[in-house]
Amino acid sequence: QSQQRQRQLLQQVFPAAPAAEVPEQQQQQQQPPQQRQLLQQVFPAAPTVGQQQQQQQHQGPHQRQQQQQQLGQTDATALQPDQLTDLATLQQHMSHLSTQPVLTPGPWCSLVPLFGNHFLPCNSIPGVVPNGLQSVPVPPTISDFHLRGGYINGHIRSLGDLYKAFVVINRAVTTQQPHPLSPGGISNADGELQYIQALVAEIPVAWSQATLDALQHPSVHPPLRQQQSIPSAPVEPSVAEQHVEAMLVSRLGWHGLPGGKAVSIAKLTVKAATSLQLGHVRSMRQSRHLAFVQRALGTPDSGALNVAVKQLHVCMRKLWKVIKWDNLLKEVYWRMTVDGLPTATRMHHADSKCLCGSVCPGLQHHFWDCPIATAVVDVVLSQLPPAWCTRTPGSSPLSRHHVWLMQPPAGPTGVHRNAWLVVCLAAINAMDSGRKVANTYQQRVRVQHAAAVAALQPAAAPARPEDQPAITNFFQPAVPTAEEQQHNAAVQQHRQQQLEARLQQLAQQQQLQAATLLREAQDLAVAEFWKLVADFVILNPCPARGFDTLPHDHPFMCLVPATNLLQLAPRF
Image (cartoon, rainbow, N blue to C red; front, side):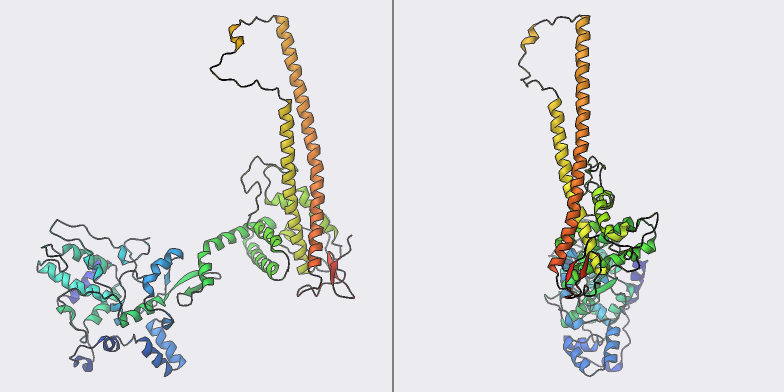
């Protein structure tokens, strides 16, 4: 249908090509104007940069804004004139460009760049990058006497040049003349005409109509129907082409910034470009945060999950802005929220065991279900009196989301928000420290057990070359009697029973050793928790902003009544 509309449009223009209606004053002009005069008379909607600045000095804000909306122009003066040629390189490292759909066709369409233009996509070949008219395939040749298309690519720059070339090529095909760009042969231009028609079919009809109307303007010299040769595109674009390129570039930009925001090329910063490049990382991190919150809350309610994810982001911003502490401690929590800690579940170690005996432990085991994590949670709960944490019969007053999402537990006297952030961060790092200690102990127990089992096995015969015969091969072994066979079987059974008893004894010793090491790991995790809380108090003796309202009887840490200095609270 698009090709049919383009064909009807061309038939209306050629060969009749009626001139567009223009004011009488412009019809009386006989001399061909220069480029700047052509820009002012034929394209009054596209002034030069200098003229635009002079006009803006005499216009009010409302008139200036209305003119920019009519031109479809946004901050064009802040752009380099030939930026459109660099968009292909920029697009390789960024997401796909998006265009603003509000572009009213006008005389400027004849100066629109033909190739590499994101406003002229190649619809016949979806998914082509950079998805421009340069992706239009060249039709095959009919015979050796017909040239392929594509020879005009080096001679045309804009949409107007394309239609000028169409007039010349169409005349050559109609009159059976050689290709205008042929190196002296008699090759026909049918292939070139098919290529131009394929390009024209990709151009919007409204843009084609506006281009033809502009080229048939009486001030254009020579007229479109009298075009005799294919125009040669200069190395540098004209002033009018530069202005149109700047206008198009100013309407290009990217979507995908946080919050659904968009940014134009004129306002693109290093921060915005980095955010665009990390869009897939941000979406992946968002999905990991959602899974983490769902695991912490244990509820599939989407509304509660979205609210909790926002609260998690606020909590993480507070950790880095309010809590003045070592960032390595905060990094453990950051990795925990995106499931980035090297647990057995994440590393796909199905045969790995925790020191407590759990198979293939994951995030929930190491930071809540493991006896090491339970010891840390019990210590935290023991320091919360009933006035600070409400006890409900039949349920634990401290749930997983209180620690993982750093939400203070409910109580008559609420726990200080920032102090609870420090407590939860210290508890999570203490659990992670206990996880590392447990892995080290478990590896030690496994190595010792494997060495003890290997010592019980009979020593293997020394290896010998395959081609070396043994001396026993030359003797005929005697057939054992029934009594000897019975005796050998009894001896073998006794040895097997002794081996099984010894292996059972080793397994019991391994369990006892693991239990002892587990209690030691619990003590080390609890000690690590108190060491970290004391470390924060020592590093921040004078309460900064956010801790100056800490009560004097607050658990874990409090302010000294006389000096208002931060100190450890008495332990219960």
